[in-house]
Length: 151
Image (cartoon, rainbow, N blue to C red):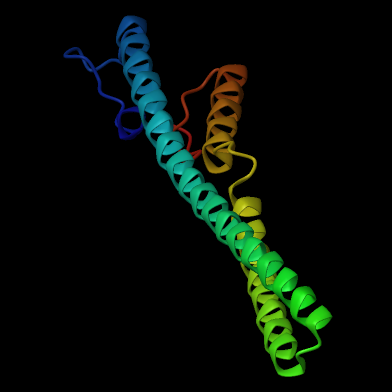
């Protein structure tokens, strides 16, 4: 957006023509759109990665919960057989597996929560600021640089 700040004059020393200003504006809008799309792509890639990690952790939690159910079934079987040391050991393992599953599920939920919604929020804010700046410039009838400086 430095082009807007560097208002060039024509050979006669007058201000640039309307055609030149329109051409510059078109180039700048084009560059702005490309930059915003690149930013959106990066932001969506980061959110996708977080969602993938969260889903993987949920899968790990499900696997541990399945093992916990197996251990709990073994505990019930051993309890019915009244072999005290066996069922105590199986119960301890089952509780440990469920605790592990709970921890993984909480971590996975946090990761998925950070990735949702998959809207590139930073890019949306940036585009809204750009639109507001351009709208204000058009309304006032003046050129404005991206950082809000009057040209």
